[in-house]
Amino acid sequence: MRMLAVLLFAAMPALAQDPAAISVLERRELAIESSVASPTHSLRLTLAYQEGGGWAAETIQSAVRQSAQMLAQCRVALSKVELIRFDAPRRFHIYYTPISRELARVLPLPRPTIYFVAGTRQRPAFDAEAIGRANSRTRPELADTVWLTRATRDPGIALAHELAHVLMDSGEHSDEEGNLMRADTAPGNVRLSPAQCARLRATGSANALLLQGATSATVR
Image 1 (cartoon, rainbow, N blue to C red):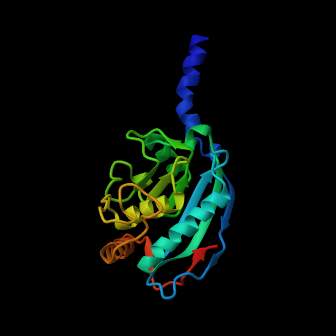
Image 2 (image 1 turned 90 degrees about the vertical axis):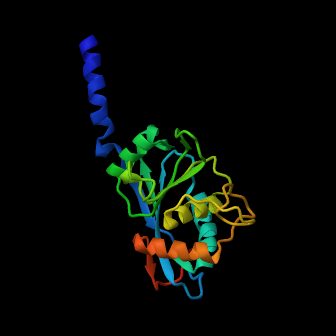
Image 3 (image 1 turned 90 degrees about the horizontal axis):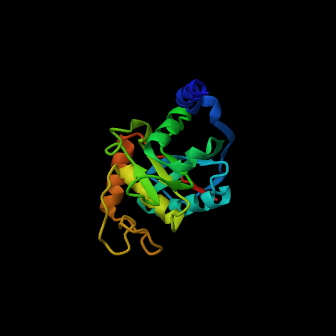
């Protein structure tokens, strides 16, 4: 019995990394409609949420629609939004670097990718977290991703805030009243300055996350 337990324990890592344990249940493109009159850049987003993880497609769609309105002030429009619902073991319900790196390896998705998860085991624990190029050197699988937990307040604003971190490849916050990049997301903090927009467009384009001169669109 002791030998059997040892063999089963040794087999657990291989079972955990079995690609068959993670499967896509639904993959669809969200309907979009014109939003920005004359966009200079466009953004394609991948949205991923797990079956049984506590997120509903309607809640995700509402958050993306609200975040698109905030990005529009930088003349950035959504050109394509893909929603992916997948099934995986319950341990993937949370954001935790070792586990989330495994998920990203087994289920590679177009970037930037927004993951909607139940919670986090990171310390310090943030309700939402962005991983760009600068802070992903030790976890390259997670570059250009955003992780939103169910505890996130004002998910649409939080999504725009974290996505701006990724597009600017910066963890900097602003002290400006009403600015989207204040440390705490809140309903009144929705504005981006011309300098922030310029950096967002330039860095996002340099990292191939934004395309220039595409059709204006937003989620409806």
